[in-house]
Amino acid sequence: MDGISLNLFLGVGALLFVCGVLCMTTKRNAIGVLMGVELVLNGANINLVAFSKYGTLGLDGQIMSLFVIVLAAAEAAVALAIVLSFYNNHRTVDVDQASELNG
Amino acid sequence: MGAFLFYLYAIIACGAAIAVVLNQNVVRMAFWLVVSLSSVSFLFFMLDADFVGATQLLIYVGGTVVLLIFGVMLTSSGPYKTIKSSPAELVQSCIIGLAFLALISSTVFSVDWEANERRLAEFEHEAAHIHDHEHGVGHADHHHREDHSVAYGYNAEKEGNTTRSLGTALLGVRFDKDLGTTGHHGEAKLSTGYLLPFEIVSVHLLVVLIGAAYLARAKRRVEIQDA
Image (cartoon, rainbow over all chains, first blue to last red; front, side):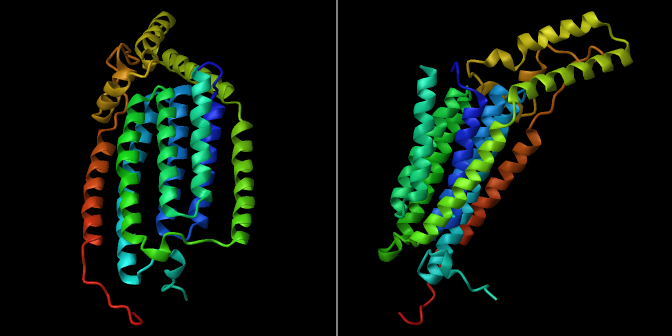
């Protein structure tokens, strides 16, 4: 691990974050949007664990990343249930079709 | 060797994430997501976070992505497997994404993190000195304590043996910070644990799973008018 600095890990985290945001905004499939959320949370997790090793955070960063993983699992379960319910009612997962609240 | 492995997994993680963005087929997106999350877990192992890496493999790759793939299988019937965006939208999103990436990385790389850490350490050192002077504790005692904290603190776990410390921290006991150190008056030092957040997140997970099962329960399907 010699020669690997904190900045490289932060760069990987930033790229994962940007990919996730792009995935969330451009995908029209609702499950694709969910995958974007997972990518964003992973980018944040890399940052937390990297600061836990290279900074003065100690174990606190790793504990925060564990909470993030648990909350991501919970969020995926709820979002998938909503997507399935939407699919049952509309026979599609295209998020552009979810326009009933449009004014 | 470590540097080579880091670059290998970093490139795999980033490339797979880009492939998730560029693919239009949901099943292929799920595959690339599995690749990306697994490489991120290997990065966690390289950061000496063995428990977090194992949790990432078990919960993300083994649980969350399998859940997503079940969702894909239940909803991707016929024409909805690939919902295409128009090329103009793709170009726009690429430009915006590159601009966003440039903003974030220029911000991250412009900070000198090591100097920040040094300054933070000096600040804490001075704060401890001021506190000692107020309470009339001698310097020798302070240095003695510092040696202990270096010997028994988090630095003892450089090799990534974090499971026991994480477990006790989630139960509210911080052996990684408190062992061998004493407070300002010589009493046992107690750092903040994570018992209450742990309980909150467990109850939250239970409520969320019950709610998800309630939302996704089998209902009689609404008849489509033009079907």
